[in-house]
Image (cartoon, rainbow, N blue to C red):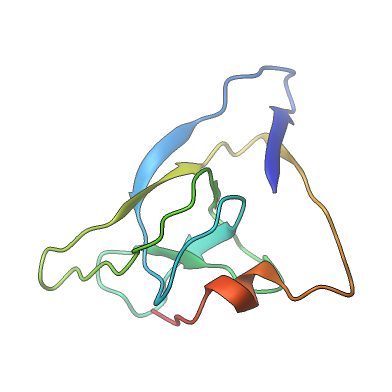
Amino acid sequence: MIYNGDLFGLQNPLIVDCPVYDASSIAEGEALTFGATTLGAVLISSGASGADFYGVAEETVAASTTAITTGTLVFCKVCVDPFALYRTELDLTATDLDVVSSTSTA
């Protein structure tokens, strides 16, 4: 997904550095949600449905193994604008982005 403005016509997205976790990587444009079992509420891939996502990754992070218990934090720029409008692309023949990049249930 790509940020495409907001409901008020402004072009100033709210982008925040958030701790993320994934066993492999977080891809730019990937919808992120809070991990259900990870202490500290790091962001993980929201899965194929994109339900209840908190924000969208604005960059690709290759090494994204955050471990709250050891203090190892990996950050990613995430658009968390509640009024954001996103441009998306759907390809029913391709593998979902989250399947390729996400292997975490943190």
